[in-house]
Length: 115
Length: 115
Figure 1 (cartoon, chains in turn brown, blue):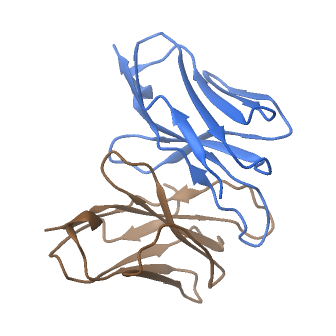
Figure 2: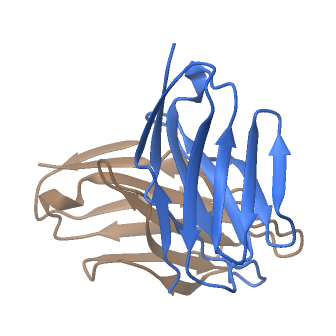
C-alpha cells in the first residue's frame, strides 16, 4: 500500500460528459502529480501541484484542469470527454518538505472508459 | 525539456537468463534516475534508483549502472523469474526542494519471462 488513495477506481461515461477524479496523497506529502497512461503507452505527465499551487504543466489538454486543496488532496477534472480520453489516470505524491527522496508514490489509478 | 529514450520496448527471455533495459537522457543537469516496475493492472512501484554521484548500485538480483558522460543508464536483472514479468519504466529528473522534482519517464519495456 503506497498510502495514496484514488477514487473512483473505475468510471464509465459517455462522450461530451464531465468527470472528476480524486486523489488523497500520502500523509505529509506536499506534491501531487497526475499522469495519464493509455493502452500500450507510457506515463504521460499532465500536471503537478505543490502545497496548493500549480508547479508544472505537461501535456494537459485545455479540456482538463486540476486543483489541490488546503488539505492537500487533489482533483483532476476532465470535460467534453472524447473516446481518446479513455485511459488509466494515476496520481502520485512525494516530497515531505524536509526528508525528500525523489521517489514517487503512486495510487492504484482511476480507469476511465468513454463510450 | 528532458527527453528519455528507453529500449527495447519488448524483451522476452527464458527463466534464469539475464535481462538488460537501457535508457538515455538529454538533460545533463539530471541527477536522479529511478526505475519503476508496473505489474499488469497495478500501480508503478520503485524498485531501484541511482543518483549521479555513483556509477552502479545493486540490490539482490537487480542492478543499475549510470554513465553520466554518455548520458545513459541501464537496468540489469539476473536470474530472471516469471514474477519479474512486468513493464519497467526508467525516469530521469533533477532532485530539488520546494516541489521542483518533475520526473520524465521512458515509454516502458514489457519484460516477459518464460518458465
